[in-house]
Image (tube, one colour):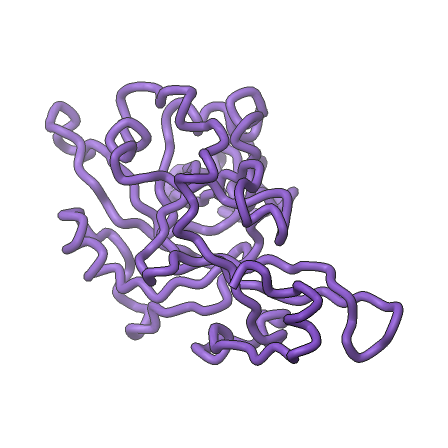
Length: 263
């Protein structure tokens, strides 16, 4: 699964790098870095869409903010303009999304990329402070060279159909797959990376994506992703700063026990 991640991506800079249109709001006071992204947060996504007023023109890459936690289009309104609170659909299994009612339309028509620096996962390990007990320790998975990751995602547009002037609510989910290679030590699931050579097919708004793009990647394709222990500060969403990614000192006896075999 992927329930927390970090991103320091400036949407304007991202748009320039990808030759995309920046459609994000400018009222966030420049606070684009988020070291503890949690579900329901507004997150950056990359989509490819036609212009509304020129639907026959070629589609263009667009940077958009969306709520992390997909809201299916058929969701009813709890009150005017507010969807009923349902399951927190922040992840979707890549192997089942095409047949799952909440995601199958998005698989066909609304696929996106979710840029991130890396994601967090918690590993149950022996507790060094209490013999015979275990503790959950957070790890951060990221590219060893520090480059940005792009994960496969799906998105949706929800409107309150009872309100003619209802504003659209954009939301997204991150696709997950079986963990592979060394990452299996941390968790049995991981977000599905989308290599740049597959972006055109994945983001194409006019054609379904090849089913092969939803398959579990090879261990070789994610060999550049490394895992390292980080501070337990990430356990609370109230904590949000670069200190969450600071290197964590590992006691020598823990290293000898094989607890940092991924480093």
